[in-house]
Amino acid sequence: MMKLFNSSFEVSLRALLLLSIAEGENMTLDRIVAYDFITIYSRHFGIENTNLHGDNDYGFSELSIRRSALQEALKTLVLDRLVKAVRQSEGFCYKITETGYGFCSGQKTEYANTYRKLAKATHEKYEAASEVELMTMISRKSAEALKR
View (spheres, rainbow, N blue to C red):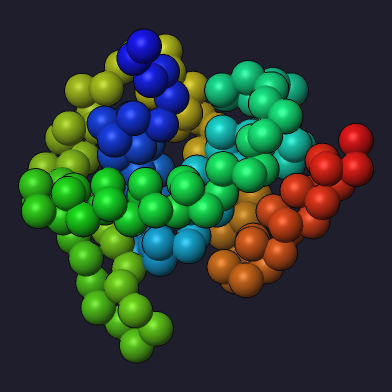
């Protein structure tokens, strides 16, 4: 059976859409992972009334797998020149290229539009938070979900 969510193509597309709404900002892998997670599970973070991929009892356990998938997706996107890797003192940051913007502008599906809207809301809500604060918040929400 074909995998519906989190295929490498979808993970790459989400990374591009996420970077496209950040208006040229450099983002660390951890920020991309956190924003992607919050965007998909936006109901748990008070951004939307529903989760983009629906409700999932095991959603919070996906975080480590999501990080690996996004790391691989970013490597491919850099090789394809859709994303640029920028070396900084604390590691690599990623930024969408003009080619990446061009690709994103052609994505007009309902999923892509909804993801962009939720990613923008996520970015606006959490742009002042550090990566550590984002991961701590996700861990706290994960613990709350396990108690239910």
